[in-house]
Length: 354
Image (cartoon, rainbow, N blue to C red; front, side, top):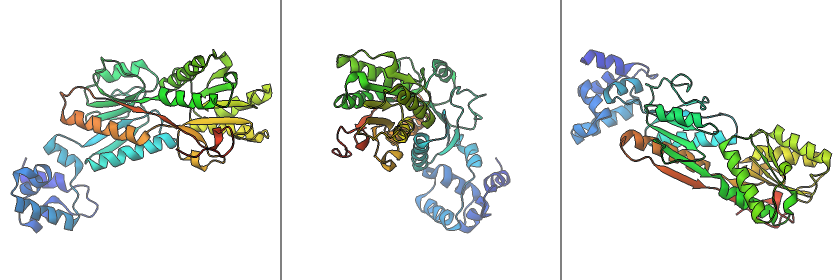
């Protein structure tokens, strides 16, 4: 590539007007030397590299990402494909992923078209990103699609099989759901315990329901059909379920494990509107341990999902895959745990946050 062509590519897009040629002139080196300091600093004498870096910092020069990619053949952009971009869970996930990527010198490109992570539907130009992070929540077809992709990938999945060729991060939904159910059984008869979950077929929701039913069974009770309810991860679904239970006279004296904190908020809202007290008349545990748990009155017990750890593990895994393409696929499993607050204590206010 000629000197003039390099200067043109590397100088575009800088809001402060500083180009690579300005840095070279100020540091009294060639444009090629500045480029090497940016891309392959080990090939430049230490004193020269230090002088160029000081000049870059003083002039506040920012190398053009795309021009740099022509040299390194890396964009240092990671694609992140999620089922949804709304709500506390995804907001926390993206904040942590963005912070971790920035620490490691990468940028994120985000889409909510996660369910079919291929070139046409993922929302990405696949030749732009170095690697892909995706969350697979309910379709084995998504797993098969990801297997066929020719890009380093890490997936946040609910279950893992030995034949998965990509790196995986899983959350053990069962451990926290079992702990929460056992806690509810500590003050409420098994026949009055309920799980109000997300929709059937969602991997996380199904795992939480299985753990709930198994824990009741170990306590000597076979769950009735109406003790496991499927809907959406939304406040409206929690209200709908609770209103139906109030109408049938079954909500008072019940204990509820909600599929997420939003569902729990809906259940509690309806109960309070009906004149019930929480936890006096109704005990409730949410799932995710989002910030809303500490803002509610009473404070909401919830199963803590290590969202930040999930995000960091996913970013680390895909970057390791980019840098070590022949490494064995990583398998990371993170546990969940119950955080007890006021909404589920048998006697109001007797237990504190763990």
